[in-house]
Image (tube, rainbow, N blue to C red; front, side):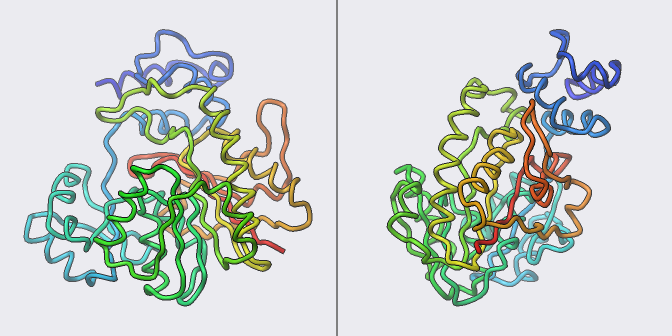
Length: 341
């Protein structure tokens, strides 16, 4: 019911009203300031759908862990517990099922024994975008809980060198447990502040993934998570400062000719386009923004990065970065691929 009321509220107002203010009549449980910001970020014709997505349960997606099992074996296990899944076009070993099946997924043996990993499809875009190959030296600079690290290990066929860094102690041990449970042997994990890695591991990695700690706007709303007492514009600014330092470290750790992928689950331009623009300025002549490979399944959710935000304009090359607008199965996500000269 609250979803329907939210959409009715938005539909009853002209698009021009979205750019002025959010009325206190809004029936949503999203922070009002967040709604105001959405009106400046999301194209007007997509706004209603984006708001609805924050307040609804999403389809469940999972990746088969090819280090432990084959697709057909995992799908047979799920069929035996009355859970059917369909492949996600353009993402190998990734499948989609109904939102109501999420509980069955996380309670099945295939999950508890590391044969499948439940993860939103937006997050599953990150590892393939790095074009990793077996034998490479790869760094995951903010790795916990490890979903993208596991994905990288599979794409590397468990060969080469994969280094996973996490600064939070509790999250670090969760990462290590996930690596062990899913059969990853090519990875070394480090309890370390990622902002310091670039200085001590300068130009050592062919690929660097930075799924930067962020304000977590993708998790606002939704079942059992309506609103967030922790969300604020102040938190966005705090996250952006850390993200700039982490991206500097990622670029320093990357070898010339290598790739850095920067991503967040935030819609805030301060945490996305602004961070990339600052890095391009800091490393002038050393970084080039490359198009992000987008599989067919995500084309409808993908939009170019913003060209400006609240009076600040960004380099035209930033249009190659991608925003994933949330819908009935994608979470909000931002991806930017950087080539080091």
